Length: 76
Image (cartoon, rainbow, N blue to C red; front, side, top):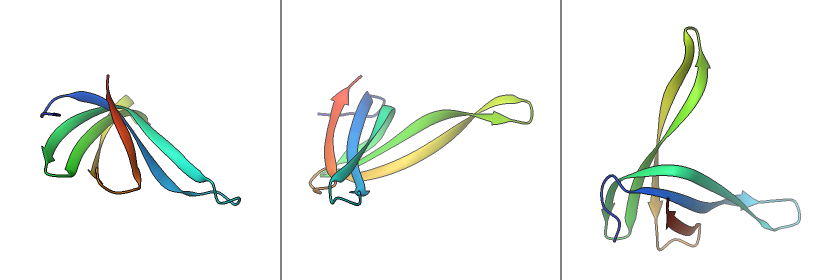
């Protein structure tokens, strides 16, 4: 069972290409914020260029693990 602070890699569907194939995206280093029932909330940290050098941008994602759009999660 996932718990707060776990580091995981998550794959999920983001749509379909022109041929109808699923497009899969992966968050390679996500941190679990909360996992209750079938809802998984994670955050990622991404370095982005800023005015004073690289800055960190925090992004939050919410997944329903029972949804067909959710492909899977693997511990880092």
